[in-house]
Image 1: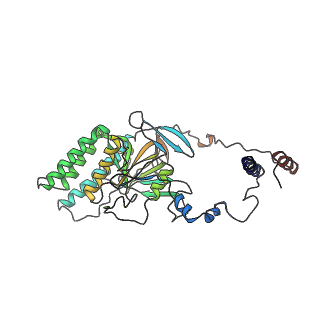
Image 2 (image 1 turned 90 degrees about the vertical axis):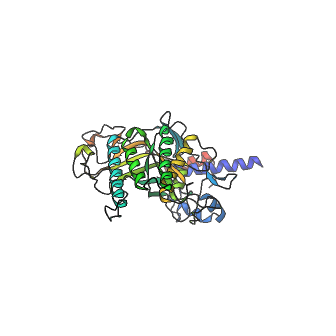
Image 3 (image 1 turned 120 degrees about the vertical axis):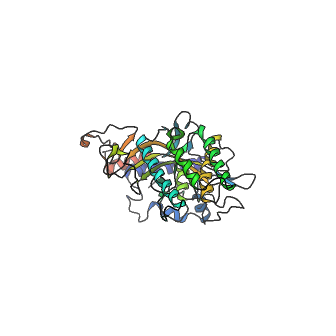
Length: 389
C-alpha cells in the first residue's frame, strides 16, 4: 500500500515538473479559471484558519498576546544587526542611524508644534487647528501574503498613517520616564501646569540629541488584539488584527515615509538653508512588534512597551497595554521632490555613489532558457518521465 502511495505521489510530482517545463500550466492551457479560484472550494473553517498566521496565546490573567516568528532582534542594540525571514529565507541586515539633516527637520517640526500648543493653552491664541505634522504622521507600507488576511479585502498590500516618535537610548529610558512621571504627579497635586509643563520638558529633551536612539522609531498598533481581556475598555472592533499587523507577522520588511505637512519657521536649517524646499524622507527596514503581555519580553521590550504606551495613554487617555511597533532602520532615502543633488529618491544612509550618467547603470536580468521543446522533445520527455496520457 505504501509503495502504491509513494508511486502515485512521485508521478504527481513528475507531472507538475513536466507541466512547468512545457508551459502547460492552467494559464497556458486556457482552462478558463484563475489559479486562486481554488480558494472558493476551501471550507469556511479552513478559510478562517488561513486568515491569520498569528500565534495568539493567553496568560494566567486572561490577557491575550502574540509571538512574532519571522524576526530576530536580539542583536539589534548591541551589534546593530537584525535578522528577518523575507521571501521565504532568513537574512541578516545592518542596522543604521537616520542622518543629522532628518534629525534637524524632525526637531524643528516638533518644536513648532509644541510652541503652537503652548500658545493655545496660555490663551495667547484661539487657534486649536494645529496639525501634528509630518514629524508625527509618516506612512507605513507593508506587504504580507495571500492567505494571511482578515477576509474583507483581496489585497495584501497596505499603507497606513501612524503616530510615530523618536525613542530614547536604552540607558536614558528610565530617566526620561521618571521625570515625566514627576511632572504628571505634580500636576495632580496642583504644583505643575499641565499639559504646558510636559510640552516644555519635551522641548528641552528633544533638543538634546545625545538622549535619542537614531536607529528606530516607535508607534502603537492601536486596533490589534482588542478586546485583549475581559475588562478591555477599547471594546471589539469586529476584527482582532489590523492589516498592518497581519502583514508584519507574515513579513516584517517595511517602509516608512515622512513628509512635510506644513512649512516650519526657523530659517530652513535643513537642506543647507535652501528656501522653499519641502523635506521628505523614506526609510526602509523592519517592523519589530512587541506584545504588552508576552511573558518572554526582554527588559528592553518591556521598557519600550511601557514608554510608548505611557506617551499615548497619559496624554490621550484610554488603554495602556497596546501592542508596540518599533521601526528598525536599514536604509534612508531623501525623497524630497525638488532638492538637488541628494533628493529625488536617492539613498543617503548608507551613502550611495550614483553615476552622473544614469544610462551607464547596468541592469541585471535573470537568465532565460531560450531552448523551446519541439513536439518530438515533449513526447520523449513524456516517455522518460513515464507520465500517463
